[in-house]
Length: 288
Image (cartoon, rainbow, N blue to C red; front, side, top):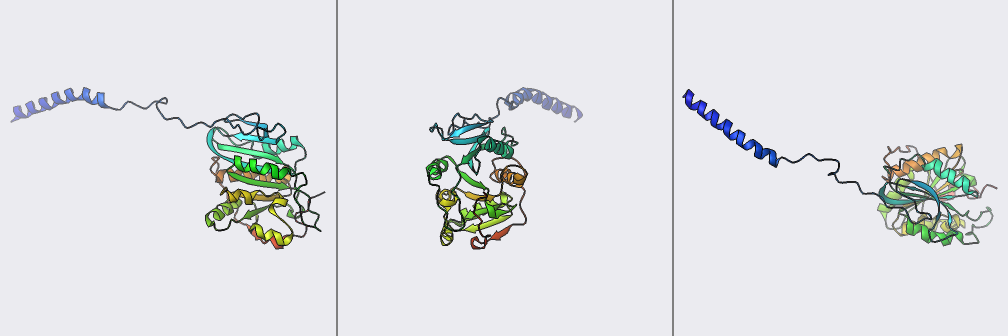
């Protein structure tokens, strides 16, 4: 029996030696860096002039086909994604506008960013004097630019600085679309992600009894929502400088919420909701 067991052991060992080379041939080769699928790369952003390359930021003019276009500052991610348009109102000086754009978004790592942050220096809205209804700017510049902005972007965030009634803390105006609760929930979440402590939820029709309109205020949100594109409008005392630091932090946090950047989202725990009719008198009167 001992001899028979010994022969069986030798036979198994011989068979194993024969099969080992076959196993080595069928074993999957280790994956190399070259064999791994590469993440898709973003294309240059060509809606401004000059175009902005992936992973870069630059000042430009918008829209690209308009030689006399408005000042723009573009932060182009290295990875493809949506376009978020931040409309900065109230900068008479282009240098100050570009400085504010860099102060807000310049620290974002563009190598990991998805999509495009398009910051535009928009024409100032008409001044509301508190005694008569606001009216759109006489030159119609806001109306001329609106279609191009809406066509270029997936998200729109109006940021007005210089409104008299806001005090130190900004207000988010959330226009609620009719018959679209899902979009309403989305824009409410955007307002909270912006870390803005004051929120006004309204339908555009509520402005009319107060002699106001979204167009006169320069709020592009209702037109954007009509295209099913999420948007909010912000009224703030300042974007630049120390007075605008909290707002700038909130706008960066909003990009995290939209999954365009890879930061950690912080939420504003205490949000005060305001009715439009209860805003301070002269809220929209521009500071002289």
